[in-house]
Image 1: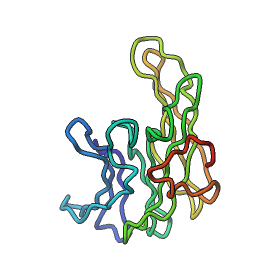
Image 2 (image 1 turned 90 degrees about the vertical axis):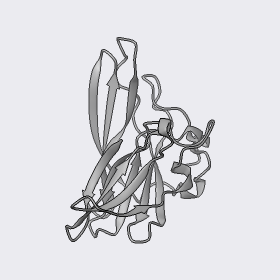
Image 3 (image 1 turned 30 degrees about the vertical axis):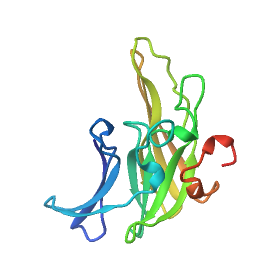
Image 4 (image 1 turned 45 degrees about the vertical axis):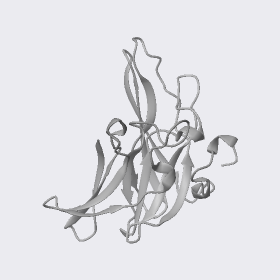
Length: 189
């Protein structure tokens, strides 16, 4: 389930993300490939982004949806589409739900640098037919060294799609990386 792609500095490699396929035992991943498609490497992800059993870890089809490169090409931001299970519920028309995690990785070492909690909106439309109603982060893009553009998109069965674009400062809010296996729902971040 490939989601995002970004050309890397130099123009001969690219980085791409996949939400994985939980039903087949494949978790989210971020890989670097050459222009001809040859594999270069896979970036290790924080343990909190790996599928887990029960009420922890990412939701199926709700993992790494967006990628953004810093202007200097040294930092890669990853955007989760939906909150981790332990962080709280996904958005509904009545409630915005728990925040999603945006994680910065050093592109050379793949070491996690920072993680922020981003609060997306509630689902803007009530569904009119049986089926999904969802709002999540669909894509991100670095505007400058400290600002991300965050695209949220929503869908409600029978009511349609929606999109909103926000500009956020990556320096604001606390670093939630230490809560890698923890819980953002306690309101401390």
